[in-house]
Length: 311
Image (cartoon, rainbow, N blue to C red; front, side, top):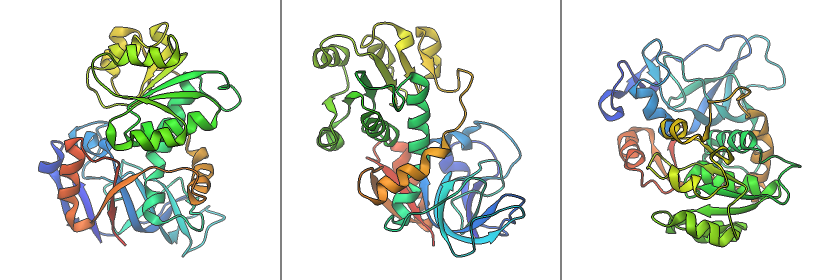
């Protein structure tokens, strides 16, 4: 089968190669899918650079949609040929950017949800939901809260805005021009990035916001987020862990009880199939054009999820 993987750590464009490999064999409680679509994420490039080091080679592509091709022992409730989606383990010699991928966690793909749209969901939804939950923006407990989502033009931030709104929060979002109008249409109040951001946020909120989720790439903007809340502990970052420790901001993976929230994926897949939730797909590429997709992702100017079409 075709697969994208790396044999040494380093910059993605230097170490990733499209190769031939044997299809993986599903173990107990695993399925193998014939991949139709695979989402690309900054986490892929971080793995190439040495994040979570382990045995090599290692594949890239951490979220897929496809059809069940084989079923391992102790798997129930799914049959060969069924359409599924889910996150892909990142510790094996191949991953999701392949003709076939193994899944430990998987869910039925709802009727009406296209493979590209399904493959765009797992990383953004899980990361956003877990971050909001850790911050305190939870179903049944968000009514009356004013929440800042910084970096709402990215896939995680865009998902976080929708989740916080569904939980009943008032949402102020920072975003560029690409998705500003779409975020307003969802129900968020939107302002731009850059100098004076905290003043603009406070003006919209009528004072400091109750809680702030930083979903933006590392850009030295966390001090502005801190100035938007009453105290640093009212903010949580999903990216700038170094600055968080200096500023007293909470950060993902920095606290106990930070288990993955994959259990919420079926709900948001259903909403997406009904047209009531989305992670915007900016562009799709055939597997052979992975280098172009990678260059666009690394540029920071993707403007939404990038998806490899494989099957």
